Length: 206
Image (cartoon, rainbow, N blue to C red; front, side, top):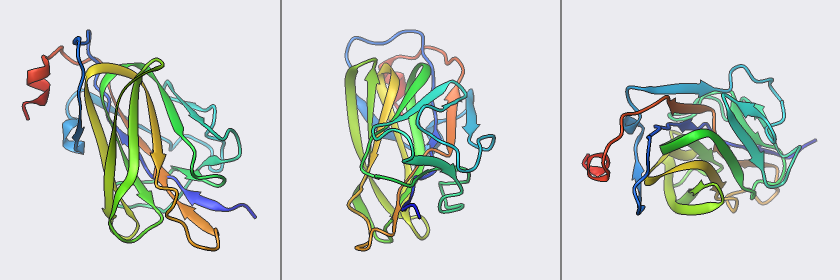
């Protein structure tokens, strides 16, 4: 019987811009930053138990550093404050990197998540953003019971557009029997079609 880990639901909001400034900074943002013009991608049309590594959903290519038979589409932890089935669920090694190649350049990204814990964690998940192979920045996110499993919403905004995202989770949060490891990533993905160009000052003046 396969060890079962939960990958949380991701609400990922992406807003496309037409050009990028010369210098970059990244800041954390909430789900409220993804407003008009954003569209929602879910995993509702995926096969329950289907392979995540190599899957493309609404133009987003998902890959996992440990390859096949480690992540599947599944009901996961069910519905939390920030997660809704179907989710990406870990059934193998849960200390890998989930990569998402986006269909275009964006300046915002966010997702709901949960990990196997019921207490606050300072380093529940980490988002890293890239322009191709170039790392633009990373942010670490704290999680709190949401309402049972530790999780929340993790969002990032960059002053330089990006087209690739990597996500890792706190894999140390597991029980001693290695019976069930819980981490949550991507069940809901928000994508903006085309946003009006705004200046760095406008994007951060919230």
